[in-house]
Image (cartoon, rainbow, N blue to C red; front, side):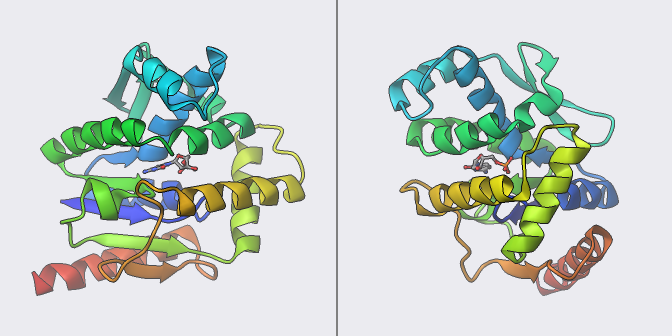
Length: 224
Ligand code: DC
């Protein structure tokens, strides 16, 4: 079973995907973490995240692996080591959105994601899972929430990670900038088409979103 969860930053995809995967007893892959690890290494090497050639070279030399973590997640390892919350820093967030624009980067990421999830089934969370990575799965969900709710969720996530997240205004700027880039890039922009099941999460807590997805998976399964 492949479950695709797409949506913009701060909508709560990671938490929902993790709990859903636990409920379904399949692994969970946070594809954003893969772009974040690449961005982390790009910044560490002093490479310009907007330079496709230089970024592709960094990617080619990357030892990127995924290993099952005890919470059910497939954890992204760089040179055999987990990077933890270092990939959540604001500069890495921005750079991850920048490196994800490059078609060569996307092509390689999608190949890795397909190979990983196909064997076991998985809940995959990202921006292009239902449009590019597994367009054929009937279990496609697009999560949304009003901007103020997304900013609050992202702000709290950064605080929990013990990071200097800056003010809510700064978080709003970061999320707005990434939204614009992620939805307008030429290759696989974040988009929802009619094959998705749309879930407005603004008034729901995590458990309620998971319940709603489980309910709809049941309905979809009966139709197939
Ligand atoms: O989900 P996230 O905020 O951790 O993702 C970080 C960036 O990576 C996001 O701004 C765009 C990019 N991304 C992508 O282009 N495609 C994905 N499937 C996941 C993330």
